[in-house]
Image (cartoon, rainbow, N blue to C red; front, side, top):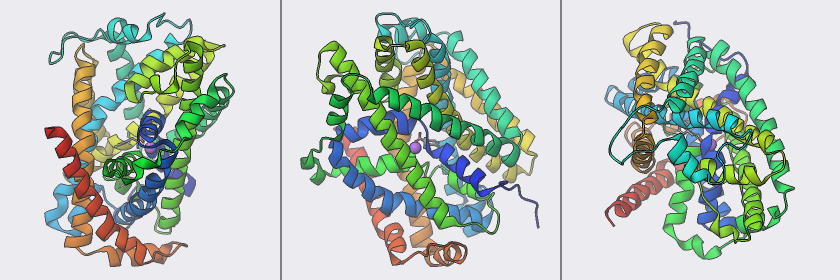
Length: 452
Ligand code: PFF
Ligand code: NA
């Protein structure tokens, strides 16, 4: 039997899995998505998606990794030779994400320092796209921007150094520092945010339910999309991470813990972000709805403005961007491990060589996003990954396992054998029926939006 790397402790695995799950998706994607899809009413489809797709799929991916003990391509190959490509597809999606995700971390590193002295001045948007990114014409690359490229190389140095040290000494050790640190920093930020004047207006806007959205199919698609992205499902990550679990591991319980921890962090982020938006709205005398944003705009245009208006702005700005860096790094480590493990096993090379090859290529490609055309390119690639990469990955996965290989029953027996919580028929129903239908619907919806 081969000597496969293993996590040192159960907590170590959980920290790594949470590290992958908790990322920019929690901090800047969830709050705006919830707000735009019914506010307080969004929690219903969201919880439904978590319980019918998120956690069931997490259990399935943990089972695949634990049972076949391989990277995603190898695990699918063990299921059936004709399914290896699904593993590579998922690894490929992760690889692409890993070329632009680190660029955002690089910006956050710079912004942690820009916070002192609020270097973005009176117009943070103009500063971000003009002074900092030196944004060029769409469709062109232009020159490399050193203030992006240099921190980008720092990000890669940290990530590749960590991955080179292996599962226990690298990935586990890093996450055991990053995740507790992130939890502490983020709690401080949220406490500060909810005690700012105007915070309650923000929370009102966030939690106020708009029940009319509940019958809108696109709201349900948004809920499932958020859950998939946020739990790092169908990206080969959770299969890879669980392939390092010891034989005796409680799969089902671990999946519930990961799922609920991620959602708790998401809720916490929603509260923090909207409290801060409420503060900003009250300072500028406008409605909260006028300042709501998500994504890059929220973190690098709106937040700098909020930070400028806060007392002790340097300190809180630094903490906010540091939390983006920590959340981002732990996710980037997980995405990159998918192809490093895949390449290592496929070509039978050492971890070090795989890190050099896979990580080296990703580093080179990521430099494209550190050019003057970087932000435009990032938007385009991110759009395709989010709308097609994720839904297709999930669809291939459940259809292959549930319908073609008909493995759900075997998997249930495998998980039940080692887990405290026993899976019932609900689990097979969720994966065999509900999830494929929802994912199919999601694909159609996204295609429809593309055409119209
Ligand atoms: N789950 C992470 C988040 O919510 O931010 C993001 C993510 C990490 C997505 C890794 C995809 C991925 F491969
Ligand atoms: Na997440």
